Image 1 (cartoon, helix red, strand yellow):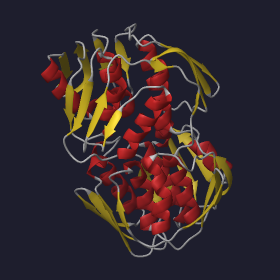
Image 2 (spheres, rainbow, N blue to C red; image 1 turned 60 degrees about the vertical axis):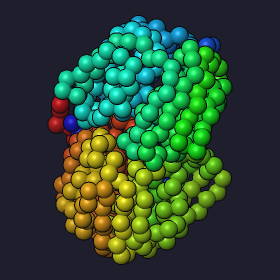
Image 3 (cartoon, rainbow, N blue to C red; image 1 turned 120 degrees about the vertical axis):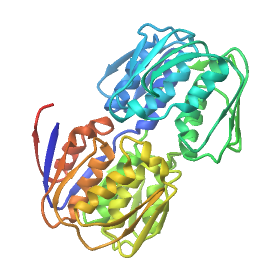
Image 4 (tube, rainbow, N blue to C red; image 1 turned 135 degrees about the vertical axis):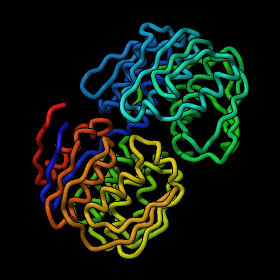
Length: 426
């Protein structure tokens, strides 16, 4: 367990933003389901991406790692070579891989750590019940054992729990020996994540008919075709540095794809809605120090932005309301409670609601001791908050950033952050 102490200081410099974790998961999976060799470049090996690579190896895929690239020898016929798959704390890994593993018809055991052990999987359990696929868990928690073969058909699934269930089915159903439909029974939240899946499937030559996000028609017996793919920069990660820029830092962020389908690209429009100033030049974006104003932020399509946007709101003029954010309660932490609890320790004025937050801004925050809740996005948001603290800030359990952005603290130092780290062991 690592703690950090940050002495408030101005950040300045240029960064290449880490590659998209969302796109990396999808590229590894599609390459793994392809006949032939795919080369995936610009990969950052966070704990989550390592979990997906290891999971694909367990299903008979050859995954070779070299610097920031992967060479993947895929297979369209999943063969379980290691029946126990440890997803660690990666929700994407477990939700994407469960239906893929079920195309094999073999027994597979899914394990995990931290909050992943109890994150909901009911959408899949309902499907298993209908298809008579054997499964067992421990009072609804991991480990999960499945034993049975996924069959083509109509799959009814809620759209307001997690888009990851829909993406998991979209990966698996083209491999089955018959046609299928995914029928969305509620309004679909996080549509951009489904768009990322559809884009990646298209890149690997798999066809899906999207009927206005209410129904997806998938022909069976399709073949994924091996492809080389370069992962684009991650808008959920650049959000931290852009908010830092609004709060007074001087950071140029490169490596972004401005026509990206990533839902977290909404950070740009939200900043503009809050009267923040942006400079965009090619693949580079810089947020300039700005007197930002409160706004209403709909989190339904970009939930991962909420922690750092809460920091921005706490330091903006007026009141900000974050709405449609109930799903944040079942992330790596209950992010609504986590971010409001920790920012209040620094003197922020935040009111927690069942599905959102009301934040009344102020000019600065106090220092003090906060906790990451073992959540990478809470830890990074607290680091950004330190820029407007009057005293040093201590962030406990700060090495959780390894989940998505292992080099975050070294990047923070590279930009001039005055930071000291120490470890208390495990």
